[in-house]
Image 1 (tube, protein in one colour):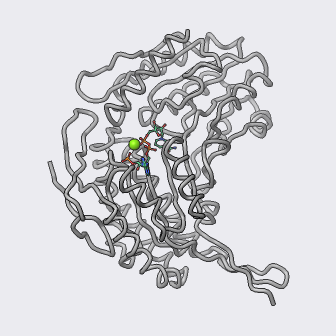
Image 2 (cartoon, helix red, strand yellow; image 1 turned 90 degrees about the vertical axis):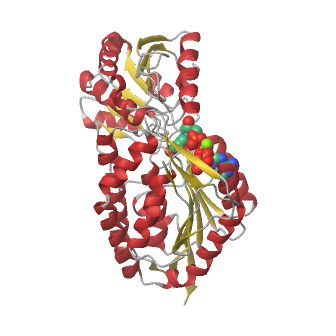
Image 3 (spheres, rainbow, N blue to C red; image 1 turned 180 degrees about the horizontal axis):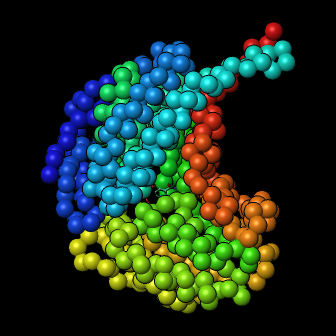
Length: 462
Ligand code: NAP
Ligand code: MG
């Protein structure tokens, strides 16, 4: 057990204002592995003041120099990949292989992508008789969740730094350790004091203080729709810019001409990865009625193979929520064909990989985000029916379409109300804009679209 102290403010670890602490628990065995200080309004205020003071110089730093600092940050993240992966496994519970490939690997790619974008971006353009400047928005308050704990910090920090903004990050209470590692990486990369600041703490205290701080110009939030709605209301009331990355209930649409076994196997792997704690997971599998029974059998077999190898979910509350949804699925008439409410291990926050058949579109498990290893398989009659089901939730974050022919899949994907669609198993692209239609959010992250979120325009007329 390691008792960490201090907040990373103005380029150094300085003592927290209060005495409260947060216990960090390993979800695989419920051991307390560390404590971190619980930030207060005073800590947030000190961090925002440091970010404000550092803003003019960082905003005026030539983009090529900001790019050089981001390249250095990428290199430190790369050099520390093992430590990052082990830390995420300890506090989130994800299997080490996933931590290495995704939790430690993706942030290196994203930091690298913003080093390149900062160097090449047109921060000035000519429009008729005007010159338009793309200037940094100012001080950013970033509030992040625990499910991809480093990625979500880097997906906000890297574009903010590329744009010339300074920021204060409040990471999730469940995963503060990798956030602390990241602050060390920022320091090692030579990013000037005050440009990046970290305050660990509880959402309703430190998170809220950050969103409400009058000297924060933009609030960027990733997490639940319930909290996102509150943050959006606060930001709008104070006339601040706001970006919200919220929940999802994405559809995996398997058209009749698709390679069924491949579509089902990749679909199950997508949902079970990270124990189902992925906002863009394809948690609804849509299959034509003629191939439905075959698909259900394949999905059940695929899920059974995982057992406890997917890792636990993040905490006891999340485990209880997920189990509650599994029980609700049965109560509303869906049929469990793999897994179920019983945990595969006694100690730790484990949930069995679960597949439901005979799910209808209006059932709770087909409408609400479960955030656990639970897949619903739904039946459709024809393409219009599939489209109605796919678009029939309040969310619109991601999705997938499978067909024998790419053009057929694309034609269907064009009609989906969602921010990202993987065509026949297309790969993750760290430059593609990521973000939601409908209640999945406001704004986009990653790539040039993600950078634009941190810029505001000024025009000179000649
Ligand atoms: P959450 O409560 O929305 O947490 C996200 C972040 O917001 C955390 O840093 C949290 O701090 C903070 N927060 C909480 N209440 C706040 C407030 N009143 N003001 C300011 N900040 C606040 O999400 P969660 O509890 O971690 O997970 C619950 C559900 O959110 C999941 O089941 C899932 O549906 C959804 N979720 C979505 C995503 C996504 O990527 N779209 C990611 C994670 C979760 P604390 O950590 O201290 O609570
Ligand atoms: Mg929470």
